[in-house]
Length: 107
Image (cartoon, rainbow, N blue to C red; front, side, top):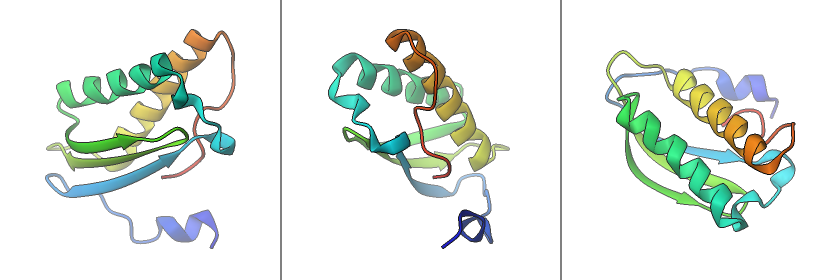
C-alpha cells in the first residue's frame, strides 16, 4: 500500500490516545547502544514535559519504538512525531558524529 494511502482519514484529536510505531531507517539497530537509547528516551520525556502529549507507555526495541501517547490539548499528532523524530535524529547524529537519516518516513 502506498504511503499516501495510509494518511487518508488520519486525524488528530486532542485527548485521543494513539499507538505509534516508529522504525529506524533501514531497520538499523541503533538502540543496542545504551546511550543512543537514552537520547531517544530523553526526547520523549521532553515532549511529555512540554505538554505536547502524555506518554502512557513505550517500548524501545533495537530498531523501532512502540509508543502509547495521549495527545495534548491543541496539539497535532503530526507535529508531535515531527518534533520527536527531528529532535532525536539531530541529537543522535551529534552523539554519533555523523549526518543522515535515523528514522524511516512515516509512522
